[in-house]
Image 1 (cartoon, helix red, strand yellow):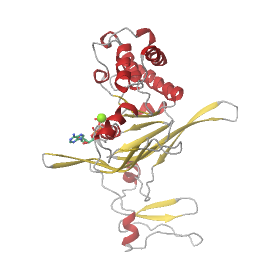
Image 2: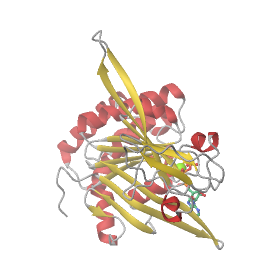
Image 3: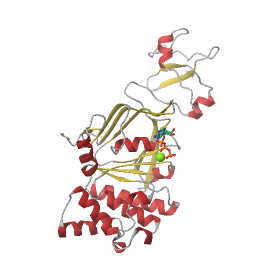
Image 4: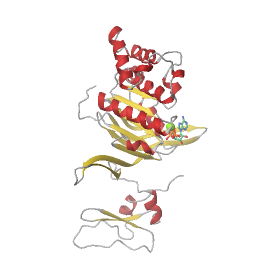
Length: 328
Ligand SMILES: Nc1ncnc2c1ncn2[C@@H]1O[C@H](COP(=O)(O)OP(=O)(O)OP(=O)(O)O)[C@@H](O)[C@H]1O
Ligand SMILES: [Mg+2]
């Protein structure tokens, strides 16, 4: 395994996961594309059933995709053998689950939970281990709770300890499934800020999946997942306005895949009653999309620009612009 700084830490290409239960097939992931670079912190948001946990379970090595590519820090998750899988889970990734009970052993103190995780991973021994346990708990601002058991901690404190446990094996990649799902709004915000602090301090690549849209206020990049596919991305940046004041800007983009597919926002499709096929026209600096049903106005043709607007009956190019029915 060779990994250079330029390689993405998480790369999913056309990832598919089909579950078969009682003869019924569920396509939980339907060709998902996602790239997260080393040191990035990204949130994946989506409605219940959109495939978030399926994605995270595959990335954590606990489940295998049906098809496509999933690579994390140089490991190919589809072809990985069981020995590599164990090593991968021990050394490369750390996880935080929604249920605090899944992250921590109830009869061990916060410090013992972190130390146990280091023991399993074989990271550090003796005094160096004790010191690292305290450093991680301090980083998560629960150092003063080191000798308490999970039952003696608040929900937010338990998740902070859980993040320290997930970091105990010094992972390259931290994966979190609804880490704030059981917390109130204020505590959620504080835990997300703690995760951002960890990402900045340790440089660990971080992927959070959640149905909570407020997460986008805490990360630079939020990817929206719909029906098992990434559909839009929101990028947040800070710029200085003309008065010298810092302002936060959030911009939403549609995700374009390798072969040029994108998902039109639901409200665009509804407003223009788009269905089955649409007409496309290439303009100097943008692409126009027009309803393609019978009787709809054809896109205005401009002689000075190349147009790929399909002529009536030009099924080949019209088919490429076919919109999909929302299965729900
Ligand atoms: N083991 C399984 N067997 C059959 N179907 C499954 C299995 N796991 C998930 N699914 C189905 O796959 C789809 C995606 O599920 P997933 O748990 O990934 O959604 P999610 O986005 O995490 O939802 P939530 O926000 O409710 O946690 C759902 O339709 C779900 O019913
Ligand atoms: Mg889930």
